Length: 358
Length: 105
Image (cartoon, rainbow over all chains, first blue to last red; front, side, top):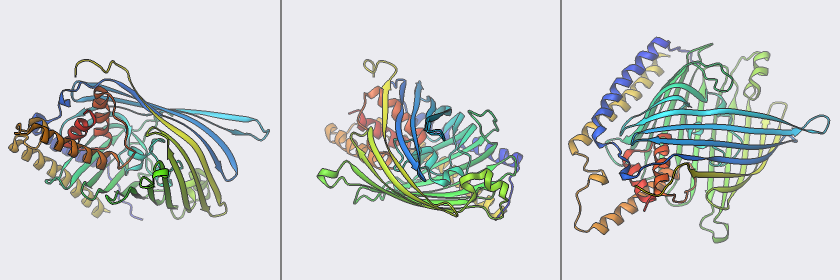
């Protein structure tokens, strides 16, 4: 296990240097930056609702969730984004009565200033690490509802500043995307974050529709663990399949994990074209030499775990979907069946008249 | 280990270097590759059709990486949605323009 530690001072110097260079680039690209093509964007309320019944090792649990997302554009370059989450997870208690636990939180609340090569973001944002947290986590997007164990290894949210963007890497055959951030520590239970820094770099080849990338995160508090990750996404042009995978390794107590997922839409079969088949395999390797107390504290991240999931998604419309999945989890001393069935609905509505000047 | 730090720093430097060179190249080209500033061709409808096809292609390759194709919304809503996706999915400026054009036609 490697153990280099990046001091806060060095990390700050690195990001300031990057900030200067990227701003230099973005200033060069200002004249060409987007002007909205004459379309005046309006505020939008979007998000998703879902209701799922989960059976984990014989224990039933119902979970209605709503995740509203408000998008407020200003001028041609600004965007304010705020997403919340509210869920009520209820199940039968020892007396046979249903008891629920309401949880809520602020997923992100960020202000973005968009230029051709750089988007400057400030506020609370989803940590740019891998692809799951930022792009696949919303329940109307994820192909399988159970969250992969790798998602719990790194800090999922950050509070601070971020630079990100995407552009052709000298040729239209390769797009490069990047993100670099710095986060402060916050102990408020609704918006808790770690003091950390890190980034992600990715290459997308539009021709073969292949994306490869790598991520890094250095926590700058407590035992200062760092994490590295790689990801890839491939959607062959010949058939309607998506293949996605992530690998994450942490130097701290949270171990390492990988998952590989394949989704196949049966769009070539007339009567089954709304159906999608999904399969995912994942392995989690707990950090070695953990004490009994640490294993208890880590919960699912304390023991080696193998898991296979299979699921079906039926799209009534592009925004309404029924999902069901079965998974088998192999953990030392506690194997379990994981069943999930439910529905998701993604909504989009304007908060301002959409007719008029364009 | 320092070796990993060096590799990460090199990757980041590479990204920044490419950003700067791409910015400089775009400036010297005078934005010729952007559809909004392209000179008007003799056959406007053919160009519109080409842009629509290119927009559809970019829509499928970028948006389809994560989710199913959404329906077309009112143009002013699409302006916001595409701006949001520009940030979230780090799609390029040109892809965003072409997707917006395709989704508002």
